[in-house]
View 1 (cartoon, rainbow, N blue to C red):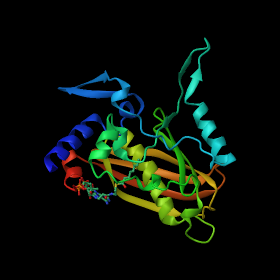
View 2: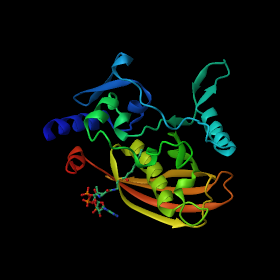
View 3: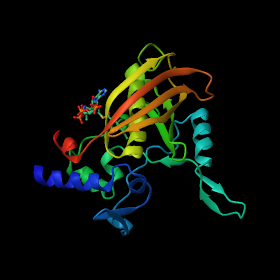
View 4: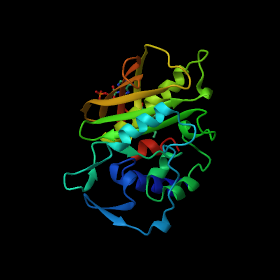
Length: 250
Ligand SMILES: CCCCCCCC(=O)SCCNC(=O)CCNC(=O)[C@H](O)C(C)(C)COP(=O)(O)OP(=O)(O)OC[C@H]1O[C@@H](n2cnc3c(N)ncnc32)[C@H](O)[C@@H]1OP(=O)(O)O
């Protein structure tokens, strides 16, 4: 069993976990030498997992406004009236990382089938983390619009510092993965400047600081949606990992 799980995971990592191709195009990748070829497969073979970052009835006006602000910029119209990709791309968000890979729904049933992503494990919409991520490849930035629900309380009426750290890790970790492939968080250095009221909508903005070998350095600011209030500032270090590092934990 360990052997077959290992082979599955190695194949999965070869696909490029969270890479642009695996997230946004329904293809499987076949590596031939150093060339990666995309092969379109019949969609019925790979049922689509649910994207949790689409609007639902719990989203407040500010959450919707910010979502629409970035979503509008995912597709732009040329002078000739043609639609084309805009500067931002919306990232889907599933309840397991495994589901980002083609065929991930099946992998997810085979490996630790009850495991769920921490930020997506509460079924009641609006109760905990409601969020959506957008990436801007040109500017090497990632933005997350977060509406923090009532189950995230720390100090009375405000969001728990651990819940804020969770979202920062999620956003910077996703960003680092897009930039560098499979990574793990080595260091998160968070300064909490101002508490976040429960139920409010905030922006998390993640930027690439630099890449050095296996190290990807990212900074992240959490602010009010108009940018006037700074809630937290973070510097994060991610280290690229090999398949064997991930498998050593199985
Ligand atoms: C969609 C949702 C996305 C969610 C993303 C969430 C991401 C996560 O939360 S991951 C989970 C939390 N992180 C972990 O559990 C990681 C646990 N730690 C580890 O596995 C390992 O320590 C790991 C992979 C980080 C580094 O180990 P390893 O690959 O052996 O690196 P190692 O050889 O020790 O160090 C390599 C370099 O990094 C540096 N380094 C390692 N750790 C640190 C650190 N904490 N701080 C600063 N530098 C560090 C070393 O000094 C070394 O530098 P240099 O090459 O200049 O000498």
